[in-house]
Length: 141
Image 1: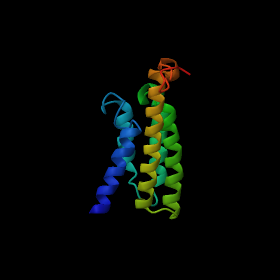
Image 2: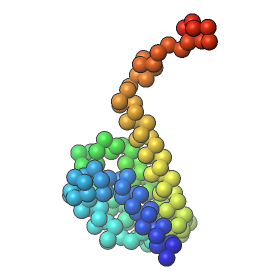
Image 3: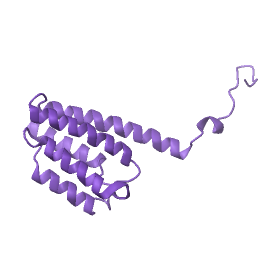
Image 4: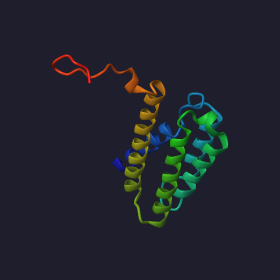
């Protein structure tokens, strides 16, 4: 049962970040429907993992940045990593639990990059907004 819960968690994490469940009309749009079909058609197991991630990648490509959102490039990177992970699961060189860990790592890294990019969009020149450094004597450098 624990393995099943981890599988569900990995699917939720991947789905949440990959815009399969978000950013597309709050999980009600065509992209969400397409990705949900991928989940239903291709279980995450040896023999169907690559097909699952190919289906998700194709959905992202089909609906594009307008459905996926501002992090389309990062989601594309996650899709590419997922395809590699799917190949490894289908080949038997990576177990599903190991693949779930890899997917978690990939999505966490992409989320970190997305947050950094968002901060950069808010303040593209953070040094210009910062006051000059003052030493203990009160002088500026």
